[in-house]
Length: 259
Image 1: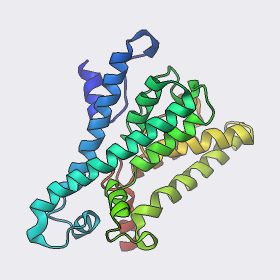
Image 2: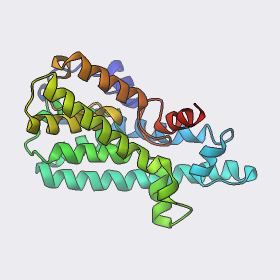
Image 3: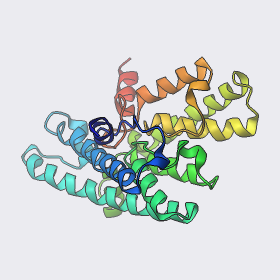
């Protein structure tokens, strides 16, 4: 119980439960819900704690004057919660339509938006009855790995310039590059056909880059080069102010610019 709770709240996704079918739906829902509010905590505090020190963080949160800091931090938390709730509801409805199972849709939506990775099926995404559902799940994880405040700024039309905001385009571009390279590795090193390589490579790439942890096959059976590339993607992670882990892409972009 302690292990599952810590793994859930930190959205790590490690589990000591080997046969999820042997456990009650209530337990599976509890795990997913803990990941959901753990992801919200990461999204809020990872940026809120930096608001007093980083000009870039204040810009991302829409704070431009130091005297507005304390009031704006609370406002920022409310705005992130609003965006988080909307993303979750949309993910539940879309996955329910795809899976035809309300409980599984709720489990995967909570774990995807929080980039947590707990699964309601034994073999994660591989056991999903719909071929479209894994893409929808990783799509929800990708949205959760973007700065949540951006959705509020888009809805309210406040200071959002997509063309000049690296937080908006860096993650999708990185996911595409990671996925395409994995496709090539799976085809060359693992002997997988192009169709299967494209399916597994793009999904695994998105899962690793967003640090969600979902899988469509047994990762331990992949070649060393595929594992290494997944490690690199996980280290990079998602965006600042999101539910994703890793170093964060914006920091890597700043480092690259300095170099």
